[in-house]
Amino acid sequence: MDVKPNGLLGACIALVGIFTAGLLLVSGVLPFWAGLRETPPAQAALAGVNTSVVGVLGATLYSAVQRPSDFSIALAAFLLLVRWRMSPWNVVLQVAIRSMFLPI
Image (cartoon, rainbow, N blue to C red; front, side, top):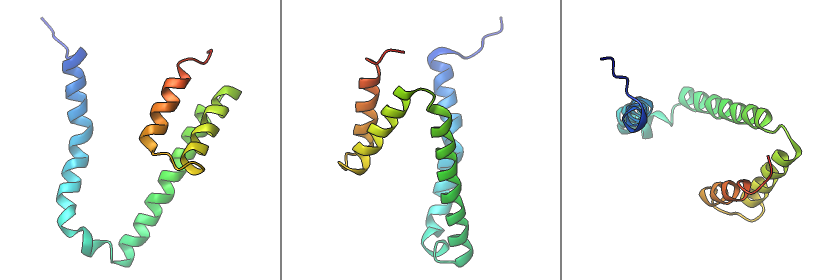
């Protein structure tokens, strides 16, 4: 009998697989981080990584906004974050709850 992990077991395996590499990397670099971030090559690399992340997030936003209601949700979330300085987790929760009641 061929048993494939699915359901809760598959989700747990995927969770461990996704986060293990990053946690190992962080725990390995953390002791050297203070000295590493002071070096000019590391600062340049981090600036490049930050720019890349902004680009990926912008592309994701561009592909996710397909209807006027999507744009209004994104704009409302942006205003809650920037204008009213609401915490990000609260904005995500508010947008998720209110989006459930919008027509598809």
